[in-house]
Length: 222
Image (cartoon, rainbow, N blue to C red; front, side, top):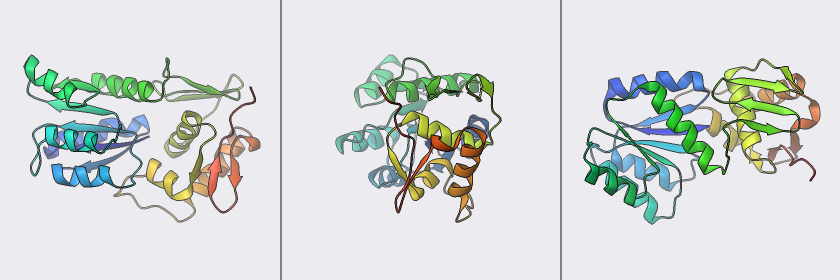
């Protein structure tokens, strides 16, 4: 899962990124509202946005309004020190999906983010299950046919994308952007290696190569 964090407080931004790293999220950071609008206007595949309201360039409310005017429905979790009910109503009316008041507990941020992602994917439970595989983002655990499977952070993130979108064909570039942040070095064959490991640890038929395009986890037969 790829998260865009828009926060201009360096210490808070660093703390959030550190807290989310073990959750298997790829977290990209911006500190300016105009940069956030530009990033969300492009083809970057973000699964959710954590958005501070007090930003330079454009404030968070302006960012939110600009993004929603373009029809971008990416889930947005607003962070703010403004705890008045009118401020919260304004943020929700502008298109925020959830609201978290500073200061907050990191565990609450994680739980709200999981719920946001779950709702955006139309899931009643945070646990993903398909083709004998069970993935639990809250406990970072994976089972295949009831047997636990140990995955690396990247393998877990990649499997989560496939399980969240069965039947979707992902290009290699898209998968790279989903599981790696902007500031991370990526080997040219990284995705191929991760897919190979997933096939070996789970089963070969789980992920199908679409020649010349990328990879897909086929939907189970109905």
